[in-house]
Length: 601
Ligand SMILES: *[C@@H]1O[C@H](CO)[C@@H](O)[C@H](O)[C@H]1NC(C)=O
Ligand SMILES: *[C@@H]1O[C@H](CO)[C@@H](O)[C@H](O)[C@H]1NC(C)=O
Ligand SMILES: *[C@@H]1O[C@H](CO)[C@@H](O)[C@H](O)[C@H]1NC(C)=O
Ligand SMILES: *[C@@H]1O[C@H](CO)[C@@H](O)[C@H](O)[C@H]1NC(C)=O
Ligand SMILES: *[C@@H]1O[C@H](CO)[C@@H](O)[C@H](O)[C@H]1NC(C)=O
Ligand SMILES: *[C@@H]1O[C@H](CO)[C@@H](O)[C@H](O)[C@H]1NC(C)=O
Image (cartoon, rainbow, N blue to C red; front, side, top):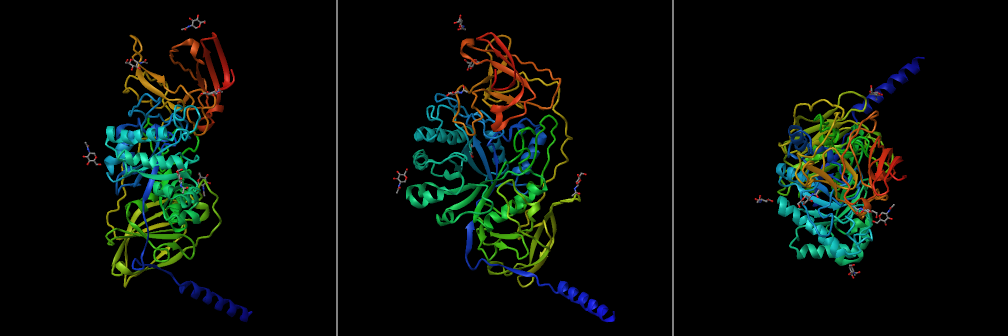
């Protein structure tokens, strides 16, 4: 009995000694051994599609606040890149964005909201980079073949007109242009696009390809002309990994679309983890979130898969979600053109799980270190699957060398999202970390992120809480009198087809909306299969609803008729199988039909 007691005591003493004398793992940050890749910035994607639809008619005050949280430097997400869809009159996930050329014989640069958004982003940050990418194309592209590559010169001309329109009408310089979102690329088209950009004096517009997988890398290695045409390899949802061929090309590698995860704190964990690990594991130097802001009706696909949420223009209610503050940990303390330190000399994995990256300014004066320890279950992304790993609380000793050997203190910014209903901590400044002889030690716990930086410019933007949430207001009506011509109706979210405001040119109707898509587009996901245009508004759960619309059918012998419907439950790429209660009118055959879906009549 005595013996056992004493052996237990010595055991307790031993455990205590282990925990008290646990070695802090040491990580070196040294720029004297050479640097890693250039950092190309963190971005958000508006469109692909129609993801900013409900943002446009927010009350001015809240709309400006939202835009500040997204774009204003040293305020919120402070994004470095705004990527937008080049509208193609085709459904591109949560709606259809209008093309600048519905038809080959016309051009218009007043449609949609991406122009407006780019102007607002530039107002807040003149250095923000702009990146355009098409999802679908209007039907005349490719002359009915449903391919943008049948007539590559025509397609390149169409894209170049969009770039030139941005400059001519909005003084916007487009920095990057893509090929065809998540659809096959065509080597010949890319080479032609590069040549035509150069001929048009648009040498500064750099090509990102192919906004899909890493596959284009093998073609780049085989073809020098293609290689000199492509500036950045952009891959979607890389799961923080690139492949050997893409690294071998020597090109800058981007996660040109990533995240797409429900924006609760697990989504925030996903975002924080990939912002570090896309470089640590995959040498990716830019990560762009789909989407920028979740501003589309709740019942449409991928609800709330944006950096923040704003779905109530009628109330002004919006929510700053965790990804905004977790982005700030990187964006507020870096700029495009900074460089990563080398792997093993400032970039790597922590011994007990988690990761760290360090970046330095072009003048070698400033250093930013970002450390994240998000656990597997609290940082899952929508795709791809995340292999299991473990993270533990740990002590991290940083050892600064080279240009940083004499640093005396680092500013500290800290977040810890909660996963158990306790209060989350987002982007707070802690007291500086004192550095002695190049060394400092930090205790990090699971599910945290730290930024350690020489910069003193960070700040957490703050506006009063947004107005409280309200249901869609009924009764609701729109006579379209308040719009400029060519704008699309607010709140009426087009899923297939594209409406535009015009004057009715009669004595009674004033302004009206008119359907401008008359031909099946070079579609992206095929929502247009049935050749029917459909827009949604309000709430699919409404019952006992009264709806009234006045419509004009031009040539009754040359139409498939019109319909009005309620309780529509499908949108996005599934629009063609939308069900609900449909009331069709076919004037040519004098028929009125009640139907449960869009296709049967
Ligand atoms: C256009 O933008 C540039 C910056 O990109 C600015 O220097 C110039 O003054 C602007 N021009 C006009 C007419 O606003
Ligand atoms: C590279 O691709 C271009 C465009 O398709 C083609 O004209 C050229 O012959 C290719 N070069 C090689 C070496 O395959
Ligand atoms: C958090 O609170 C919600 C609502 O009260 C509850 O459903 C959920 O189980 C709680 N989660 C945890 C981890 O306690
Ligand atoms: C009304 O007339 C203008 C000017 O001719 C024209 O551009 C517009 O398309 C017409 N509106 C409709 C709905 O036909
Ligand atoms: C839709 O229109 C295209 C031509 O634009 C035609 O080939 C196709 O058969 C039409 N589909 C249906 C279901 O009517
Ligand atoms: C539609 O067709 C019917 C029968 O052919 C014809 O009588 C009528 O005039 C046509 N209507 C128009 C507006 O062309």
